[in-house]
Image (cartoon, rainbow, N blue to C red; front, side, top):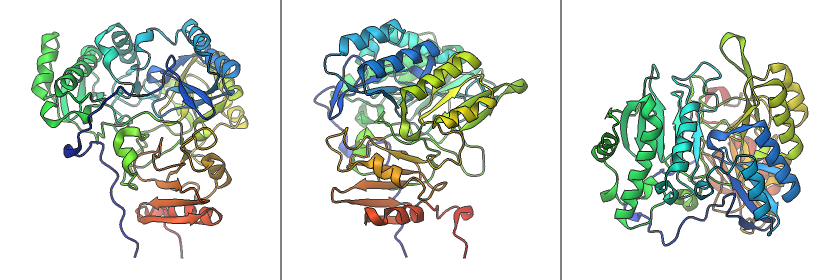
Length: 481
C-alpha cells in the first residue's frame, strides 16, 4: 500500500523558526528590474487585476518594443515583462506612467491587491468589492507609511464567495451577508466593520503590522513572520480602528482562511482543490510559493471557470484561461480589442492566470479559442502549470515548459499538476496537486496525494502523471475495472 501523503505545508512558519531578515525583499517591480538569464524582468502591479483597454494596449507595446513579445500573469493577477534590455528602465517607466500604471512610483511594489474577479458580474457574493479596491489603492498611494511594506505583503478583498480565502493574504476583507458589514482579517485576528470603513480598516491593519514588525526587530515581510510575542492582537487592532473613528465588532472567520503566501513566477491556470497536497519543501515554507484557492466538492467552484459568465438580466461576460500563464502580444491585443469593442472596455486579470472580459457576449468565445486561449474547463491546459524553467532561469535544471507541453494530455481533467525546474518550486499551487520537480539528470521527482515521492525518467513520465492525477479521494475519478 502506498504511504499517505503529508498534509500541505502550513502557511505559518514554525514558531521556533521565526525568520530574521537582514535585508529588504528582492521582489521585482516596474522600476526595480530583476536580472534573469533571458534578460531583465519587470513586474507591473495591477490592483485587483483591473485594466482599461488603453492600459492593456500600452503593456502590449512595451512587451513588443522592449521585451520578448510576451506577457506573463502572476499568482496575484499582476503582469510581467521578460527579456528586457538592461538600459530600457527609463523608457519602460515613461510608457507605464503615460498609461496610468504608475500612479505613485514610491508605492509601485506595495500595490499588491487581489479581489474576487467576478464581483459585480455574476450575481454571486454579498458585495461588489471593486469600489473598495479603488479606494484602498488610493489610500495606499497616499500613505507614506505604506512605502515600508515589502513587495510580498498582500491585500485581498473577497465579496463573500470565498475565492480569496486560499490566496495567502496578509490582510483580507471578507463581505458578510447583506453587504452592510465586512470582516477584516489580520493574521489570526478578525474584526467586523461597516462596509464604508473597509478600505481604511485594511490600511490601518497593514500599518499595525508595520509597527509590530518594527517592535519585533526581525524586519518581517509578512504577517506570519512576526515573532509570536509581537503579533497584533484583536484588542490592539480594535483600538487602532477606534482611534480612527471606525467602530469595530468581534467577528469569527467563517472561511477556511490560509492567510499567508507570496507572488511568484507565472504558472498554471488551475482549478485546484481544497484538500491536502504534496509537501512542497522548504522553499514553499519560506513564502516563495504560488497560492491558489479552489472549488470545494459538493458545491459551486469558488474560482472562475473558463467560459461564459452569466449575470443578472441576461448580461454576460467572458472568462478565458492562459496556458502556462503566458500570452503573446497578439493574444493580449485581441483581448484588449474585444473588451474595447464588445464589452465595457475593462479587463480583469485573475490570480489563476485567466482574464475576465466584463460585458462581452458568449458569441465571441470561439474566436478567442481560435487564438489559443483556454475557453472551457475541458481544455487539457486546465490544471497544468510550470515555473519559468530553462532557458530563462539559471537555477532551473530542465526546460520544464517544453516537457510539460509535450505531456499536456497526461491525466487531463484530473488533479492539477505543477512542473518545477528546481526544489524552490516557484509558482506552485495550493490544495491537492501533483508535484513534478526536475532532478537535473533527465528525470523528475513526482509526488501526489497518496503517491509518495519517487523518481521517474522522462520517457515514463506521461504514464506516471496520468496515474498520479487520478484523485484517490474522488469516487468519480476512480478507474473502472
